[in-house]
Length: 79
Image (cartoon, rainbow, N blue to C red; front, side, top):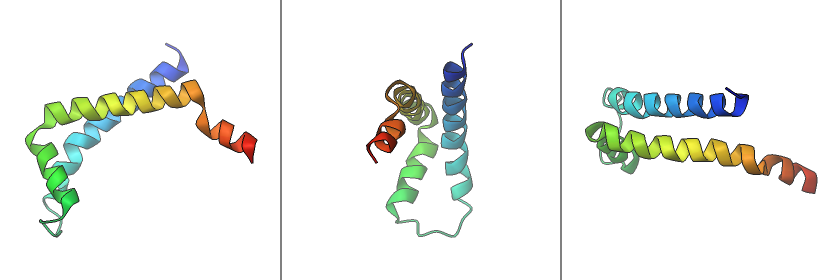
């Protein structure tokens, strides 16, 4: 496996793990339960499979497109 593909798979793995884990942990923190972020995380806790698929696709595409287009290198070359 090439380095880029391995990096994409690792990023997807951890995005799914964090998408499932953080909503579970956030319920124990003393936060304002009416906060929009808390509501979103609570929804992720209720729908772990569908939200993990969405997060995995976004993460995988973000890393892939980053390798493909290298935007930071292009920005650095302009400066």
